[in-house]
Length: 223
Ligand SMILES: Cc1cc2nc3c(=O)[nH]c(=O)nc-3n(C[C@H](O)[C@H](O)[C@H](O)COP(=O)(O)O)c2cc1C
Image 1 (tube, rainbow, N blue to C red):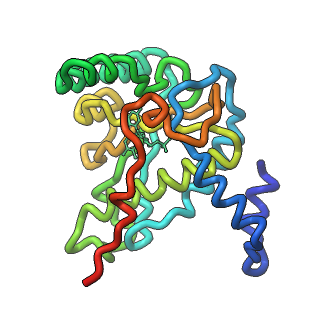
Image 2: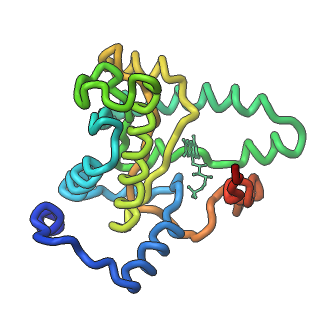
């Protein structure tokens, strides 16, 4: 991947994103999926390094780049995270009754047992990078910056054929303690990364009759 990296770093002039690229980019957005079913095959660490480099180009408030990655590698730590998920998911399942509860129980909502690479994502709320620009009135803009980075990472991974699954059914305090990170780091999300078992243009939750896409977010109020 060093060639691709060099291309990004050394681009001498603004590229032209021609209609063919625009079409491909639209396809990339359409075919990005939240992936929960992974092949156990290893991912070349150089590919992950490339992804991490690309993710650094994401927008962030005040150019603060507050995202902090923790690569969760050891079986013991993964077991802790998965147990955390199982506990939280049991509680979450209790919110549904009848048919919905049965459907919820059949959903697959994480790939922690198989995904070859896993990252806990934190926001360093104490970072001085950016010197406060843009976050004096809305400190949560730091958290949003981490989310913006995750979307960049997600799309870049998909372009390389890798799947990413976001797990949020976790107790943040427990993750923070288990991973022994600084107290100013706020847990944002947990990413499973690897080669997907299958590819789909529709979200898993749509396919499994949980929730369709709607137009609610497409409506634009005029004032
Ligand atoms: C903030 C956030 C948290 C999410 N948490 C979970 C999760 O805990 N488990 C899960 O299976 N999917 C999770 N997802 C994935 C969504 O369910 C998924 O994005 C949505 O159903 C649309 O599917 P798509 O990403 O394939 O388009 C999360 C997504 C986001 C943006």
